[in-house]
Image 1 (tube, rainbow, N blue to C red):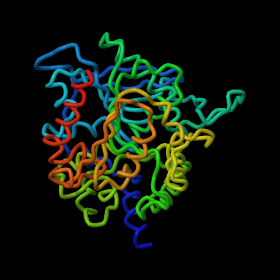
Image 2: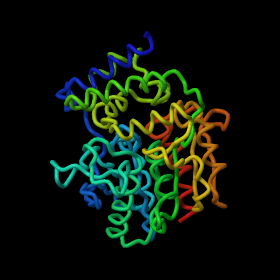
Image 3: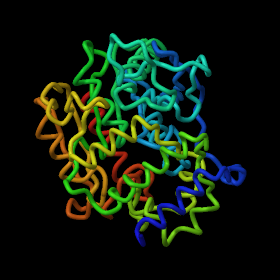
Image 4: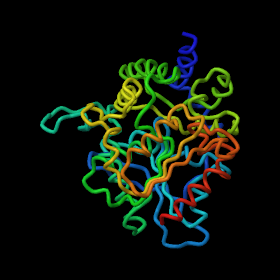
Amino acid sequence: MKRVLPLLIVALFIFSGCVPFNFLIRVGVKPSEIKYADTKDGWRIALYHYPARGLIKKKTPVILCHGMALNHFFWNLAQDVNLPGFLAKRGYDVWTVDLRGNGRSKRVNRFGDFKSADVEENEDTVQPRNVWGVDDYAQYDIPAILDGVTQETGQESVTWVGHSMGGMVMYVFLETAKDVSKVKNFVAIGSPVVLPNPANDILRDMEGLQKSVDGLIDIGLKGLRTTAVLSPLTSELNPLDTLYFNRKNVDWDNVQRLYAHSLENIPKGVSRQMRELIETGEFKSIDKKFNYAQNLDKIKLPMLLIAAKGDALGSEYAVLTAYNGISSTDKTYRMFGTENKYKVNYGHCDIIFGETAPREVYPYIERWLTRHD
């Protein structure tokens, strides 16, 4: 109970609707423009553009995809922690995205339901609007995003950079899509296809809590981003801190921005898949018929797989399992921790918005992109 109580406190605030405080916290760096890409099942996906600057060459466009319960703000919380701006300044055309249900992405027909990947092709039934899973991101959102960015840039292919679930969704796409030619390179940052079993205490507690959160959504309590005023109050209690970052490597102003503007609901379908991952240790389709952990050998394109030493989600074990499973002859594994002479043992999210990330992580990613352009 002592472990669950802080989680319940956080969840109650997230779902309480105390959102008016959010406007007090300054948002991150704004993109130059926002475009939209329409999916085949009726969603309009938001694409945020950071045009190439500096010495501009015809480089492969870069798409940055957020993880579970986050949105595009995750990548650019402030001027000093801004991966899109870092890459754009070095000549890359950069796009961040909001997967369905997050940020500015929205349904074209707000009042309709849709047929998700959890429904057999011969069934006439539809799923409620919040029961999409990672499979739906891969089946519908990714093709729309790839089409949208290649059309806007005039390029034939892109580099996909995914953090956490943003990388997992690309694993799904590469293993199941008939045509993956629009993805030239893939960078997966803390993206697990397996978890140690049994899972750590925080994940097991969150698994139980998410069942209660699903119930709140069912009865009509709309989840909202947590108010940033909450984060200092829970700094000693909040297990999300332990799960998300190494608190020795973050500016608390950026943590407030993350909690105020980037946190999102976890859709019920995604929640089901993550609970299955925690329970069984392997990432599977929402209907449990396809095991993504066991089909990694279908992936053959160049990959950079990044792990953070202090990551409680995308652990070294999880990332190395993916590295060993893919069939690519051009693959690189990198762990960010003190044993590799980095300043800190990075956590799950401070690998991107930590104070030392712009000096250590960003240049490593950019060098890999340059070699594979």
